[in-house]
Image 1 (cartoon, helix red, strand yellow):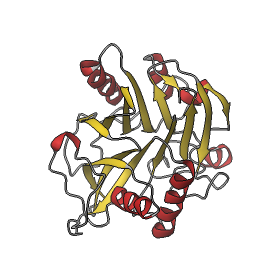
Image 2 (spheres, rainbow, N blue to C red):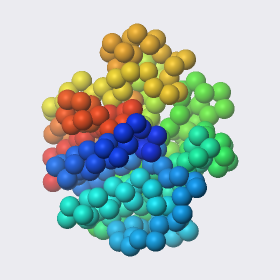
Image 3 (tube, rainbow, N blue to C red):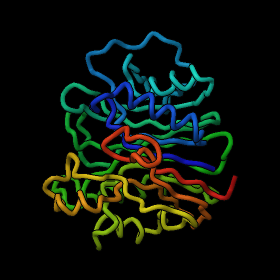
Image 4 (tube, one colour):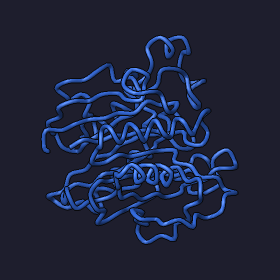
Length: 286
């Protein structure tokens, strides 16, 4: 099984159209069973799409409005034009920069048979950029596995500390967990693994496994090669530029066997398409 996660920074990126096409090229080449995306934007002032939404599955039957420039919709359309059909769902979470509806999306080669979404922040104001949710799906090919996408905040945030958000994540999952189910959470955790005693360690101590650490073959794992929005006052710029940071992860609640974990869209393995690089893992349970 192959999984990919990427914080897309969509619509905001310079040369967005070419980066969109490059990411679609990556999916066409790798054809993951699941890929999860964060910062999946659409423009607030764009009209609702009137196109065929084949493959789109509204989460929990919510009345979701997909606008014409919705990033997830654009990805799905370009894939379909190349003969590769994915099922996908998308939810809006908050307003970004005052002009975007920012959300989460998750795609599956197999049919989506169930979905869930919930808040993972105390703040639940659509106009507040600190509002957070997570989005999960269950698919026909893996009937006992849930796949979630999430984008969490920072360890030391006074209003929305990471610890509280991660507690909401685990509490929401535990409330509906069945004995034979397993869970993956893919996303941007804003959690550098080299900072001891903070976000990364807190997730591990709660019983979750970093698939990068489980992988038999892996690279350096760096998913951000420079100081990005939200980190200017949190890290030494020269250190971040020299060593990069690992902020993006694929976590599992089981100690599974992982064949490979690689960073993608980093200029080495595929072109850069966002301010984050992506993560791709392949497990042995094909």
